Length: 217
Image 1: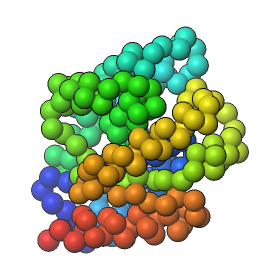
Image 2: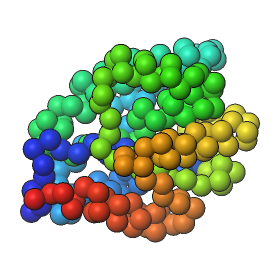
Image 3: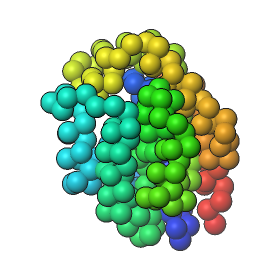
């Protein structure tokens, strides 16, 4: 059995609609479990009872549209609870945590695509979570038209409110995620995600091996 560090790693998957984040989160957790590493798989928005209620409010389509700043504040409220109730207890117990989205989605959706200044979002993040960041963020990158086609093929989903926005919005999202990766190369890795789920999973695994498993004693 592979021995994990005392403070287990926190891994996030990021990317636009239809990039395959949920699938890759599950595949990575299965691969880690196969070598004896316990994982907690979670998501945003959501991941704790309160955060799941915020998710339903934001993504169900029943709430009238609000501006990106209001969205950002709601996502942050959910994230604070998610970290306190789910992520941090697992990490401190030695369990790896893999999350389908985290704070970078706020910087991309409400920031790069929504227009809230990055400095404003960074200040809010620091106010509520301090310096807490993922240890590794895997950004699944593909042209937005491909991702939207994939998302459409899976039928109605809880994220239709964002999927239905114009192509330019989704291109801004893509560029936002790529800018985050360029600014934080030690934390982030971009994975070309237009291939099969198995191909993408293999690329993700090589990065996890090199950046995290190589440090396990």
